[in-house]
Length: 606
Figure 1 (cartoon, rainbow, N blue to C red):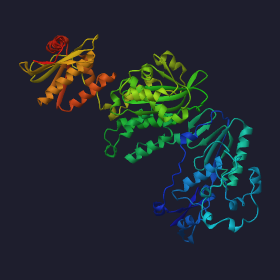
Figure 2 (cartoon, rainbow, N blue to C red):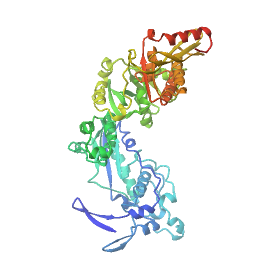
Figure 3 (cartoon, rainbow, N blue to C red):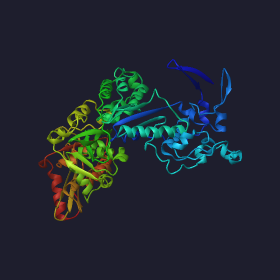
Figure 4 (cartoon, rainbow, N blue to C red):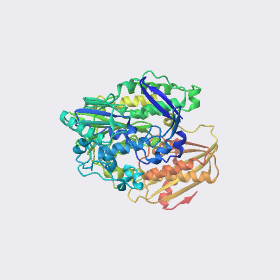
């Protein structure tokens, strides 16, 4: 079925419903280029042009089989397409392949089609083609049904790339260092397009401009910006009433998230919304604030410089409680200007990492997202932490540090430690780079539910209540630095009355003091588990162990990380587990058992 519509009140467009047909067509595997890859390579350009093709799909001839399946019915009768129509799901991919072949020069037209090309085009391209009719015996029926790519007739060696750039379907952008070079490149391109019978739409194209619109961006010699007209179009948008509306808004920002330094921080609240929450308008204050911030940021997006692979890249990471962001920049006249922004929200496990480890995640994010852009270039990392030097150079790294070190080791990283933003770094950062304290302000006001999952527990440094009833576990650990031999002790108490349920001492080999403390806690938890004690209060004088298990401080040493993971697993066996940090004076029993075990050099049970 086909209908006819007017476009812009002038052109007539025919719309054909190919939905059923598309269900039976096998999708082509030809890839479309990434838009970010098409926005680079303009670092030395001064003059620009953008070309939009006219009636682009109609330049492609249909095979006999394709003509049969493209048939349609309209009030004027039954028709078949001899040129590729709009609506077929493989049409954009086929056209992309033809344009890429036109720009890069892989195969040439078959002789019978090349004979129809104007002679001046063939002369310019230095192609020899016999004029006149091509004998039918030279075009077998088998090859007659094949496409130009299936025929695979290679082009001469002199017909190489014409621009050194790809297009996005029918949109081509190019820049040149001089006006003469731009005219020369345009002349070559137009002859190549004429060879493939592709027309250019003059009203939709730009020639010899200082800046051009391209794929919702504005490209100039200074860099790229978000297209002002499109960016300002979101300024008056109301907050969506459905989840689909929110998703549509976030999807429209996919073009522009590279312009926003803290995009994952601001947008995280919107990504967590549910349809029921939006329809009931329940707890939408933070979501609406995030929506308004994003609209303001889109309108005032900064200029992003063109990446120049002849200069070092600069990475400035930043992490907060629940997100890791980074800016990729380059230095111009002593000032660092942004090239791209990236970041992501941390997962549940990463929320417990130290802030320095979170900044490592931000650096790894840059290396992953912009790998094709920065591969082989020197990188300078500005950070207030020196942990990344240890990760790369340490010979004793373990745990998650090992894959981090392996990933970072093959990059040419120059890590430069800075004390504070105001001590030099802020002075050389361009206006488009947001300072750390401003990012932290946004992060604190727009914390998503994920960032609140692991709220720090309140630490207790007091004695138990006088009227407490239940079971208490006290533990302690010790080690000799010279021999690395240690011991731990743990006591289960029944309150009130302070009667000893069980007390043991364990000898340990090759441990530090913190290792021994963790072993004392784990042994005590195992004792309570074997007695099927559901509710337990744990007291100890090791601030490090207690606060790491509570989640108040991060654990960085790989040997302690394994112990901490065991403690987290043991927590699941208790309905209630309370940890209390006490002074050493109130933990003398466990301390006595630990000391005696170390003297006896053997494990024992009281």
